[in-house]
Figure 1: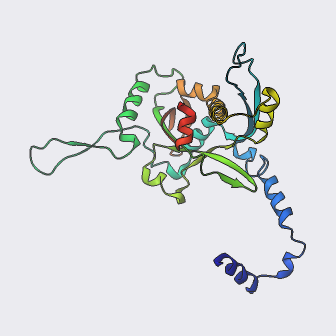
Figure 2: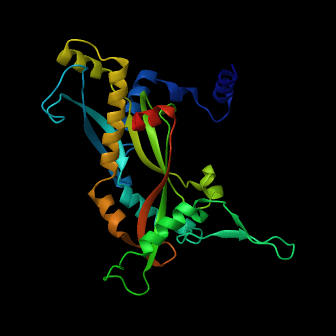
Figure 3: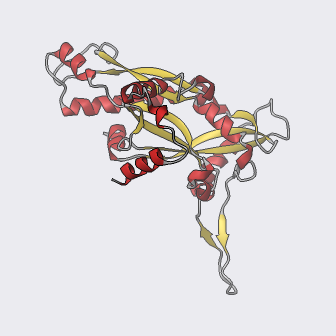
Amino acid sequence: MGSFNDLIDVILSDGFNPEDLRGFSSESAQARLDGYAEARGTFSEKDGWIEGAVEISLPKTGVQHASEQAAPKFKVEGIHYRNLTELIRGAAQDSRFADLYHWHPNKLFWVPPQPNQQPIRVYTDNYNSDAMNREYEKIRAQPRNPADGPDVETVICSLLVWSDATHLTNFGAASLWPFYLYLGNLSKYIRGMPTEFAAHHLAYIPSLPDHLKDAYTEIYGVPPSEDVLTFCKRELVQQIWLLLLDEKFMEAYKHGILVECGDGVTRRIFPRFFTYSADYPEKYAHYA
């Protein structure tokens, strides 16, 4: 009722002209919104979006195939994602956070004011954790790239991925499952502020389409069970991660990427994953 009253207030306001609604059709407007959600609209190529597809295997209990490759496949389309390496490069070049990134992890201690007290280790963020410090030391133990000048810093980029299959994002009538990327080199207080726009949109993934059941029934003569659908969801997640962890990213993981960062300093950045925050269905999809 409150929303309806708000609509009445808008219509009765001095700045609203009822003639602007002449010829308006909610169906046509919805269709335009749905069309805008294609890669040429919301997921524009100029913003780094890629539209891809993956194939998942369709299993059936008691049916054997010569190999996994020989098993029937189902193609899932409409997967919108961005190149992970280029996301990292763009984030490092962002001048807004140039002086706020912690490219070199550290250990933080609190010294009690009483005399003869030992310093106490304090953990406040990803960049002063043992995990990030250990991984940084491994990177520094590697041979330095011979092409790098003496002024090039070797640093670590902490990747924190978040996704939630139960909170789908709506684009018109289409529902997509979002994946977001945060950099753990930034303070949690910055990452947690929506107004800082510190989250990077990594991928928007469709749910299993309804016609998968039709395709499965056509192949095997019976509809898929709940266990089969769970398997297919797991396969969809795994195949999409293969899209994200492409050869370009694996090269960056092993050898780093050279980036002139937002503060003007050139760094060789080695990406490393430290957290993947997901809801229960996705954990089941990964580890079942």
